[in-house]
Length: 149
Image 1 (cartoon, helix red, strand yellow):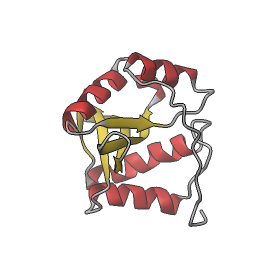
Image 2 (cartoon, one colour; image 1 turned 45 degrees about the vertical axis):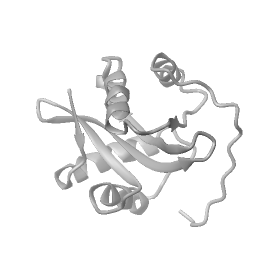
Image 3 (cartoon, rainbow, N blue to C red; image 1 turned 180 degrees about the horizontal axis):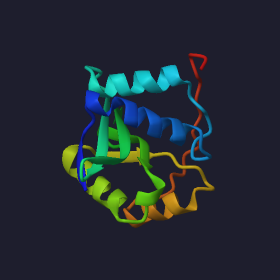
Image 4 (cartoon, rainbow, N blue to C red; image 1 turned 180 degrees about the vertical axis):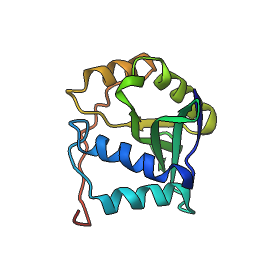
């Protein structure tokens, strides 16, 4: 499997995977097509806070991921949010997630923290994340949405 930056040629296939992901029980909020398309455009455009990656094997896309950056004053450095991690069902359980986490740690080698969100019911994902060193955060997250979607 190859992990590479998302490109314009990936737009339609990544959008199709995002639609599956955002219509699944893996997320609380089902985003509109407009938002998902803007996410992809920002990943392949000039938006400095978000990057997109695809997982590819034999020139076929197996999945995608998106990251965003923030600064953590608690640890004094860059925090990488693993926003979306999606693998097509037939590709799960093959070690691709572990490869992705290692790739992210090398790609963002100056990061002091990596964060992700997961639905409590997504037991397979939680096990995968734990195997890769992630733990449950004791913080309770609160949000305020500033746009309607």
